[in-house]
Image 1 (spheres, one colour):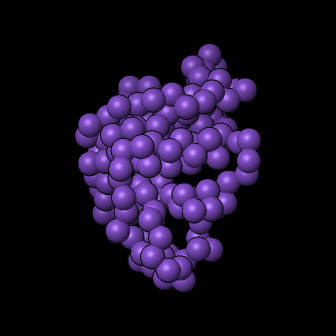
Image 2: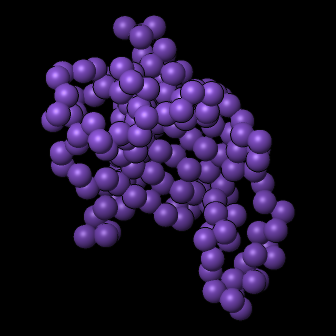
Length: 162
């Protein structure tokens, strides 16, 4: 079952990113770069059961992490001490995510993600197994945050393309 989830998550993101047009949206204070695939923005046919018909959109985003200078040291430490969450994150080069966005209230639901190493190998992937979504599954973004900026840019691009 886990293998099936990995295959589905990978194929979901691969299909949504076939025509990639990454646009840099923001850079965090730590150096992570957040990009939006402008070609992946499309209307979603996923219904939210406790909400009247609202146009939700699907979008792919990418977070590229800054180059890690201590990755080699972290790998040696991991061999002797075991792998920690911090060292796993240090090995991530970039993460592709697929979001379901509600432009109405600037909220999102993460449908899937794939974390990649610098050599392009998949480190970890995940895909939602929820067959039914409610408004409680969505995370409302906070103003003046990177998440809000990503949601607003996605909605703006979607509206312009209509």
